[in-house]
Length: 76
Image (cartoon, rainbow, N blue to C red; front, side, top):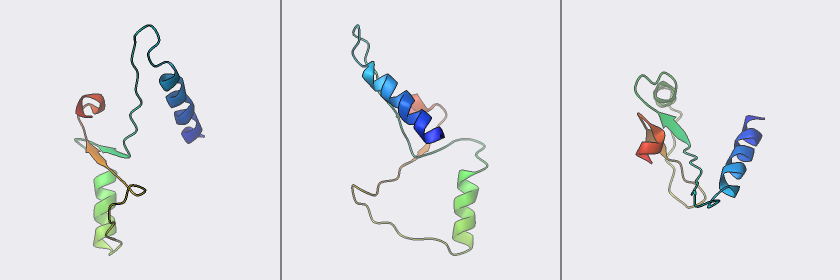
């Protein structure tokens, strides 16, 4: 359900692009974390500790980007 809502909101923003000269865009970073993160970094550390690590080779179809932010729109 959340994914559907995100897609609908993204479509609404992108369809409003260049109306009355206002430009819009949609930002969709995959892994966002910042100061005081208590979920993403500990999760990856736990996976590594128990041997659940894998090397992923870059291909255009497989692209993950981690984003450390204080304010997401400023850092993109």
